[in-house]
Length: 102
Image (cartoon, rainbow, N blue to C red; front, side):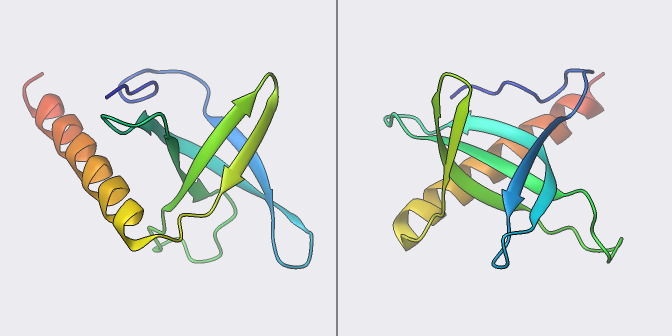
């Protein structure tokens, strides 16, 4: 499992994802990771311009990079979603635990 962004103080990575009407919305990438035993890469993003500041909505996508091109794929398979959710929760738990030990 690799984790590229947790614990690093750097500029946030911003991506633009078109909505149903074709309007591009800004999202901040909060985490990228790979699932053990798989070549699939995933990213977790949160909307930057959330109208509801209390909302903690996190979106997950499988992605592929081809040079500077980034392709996002919806996770539509329940089994794949369960693996991504479990990996994300494990990484968040490790981050939370690591922060307490500092």
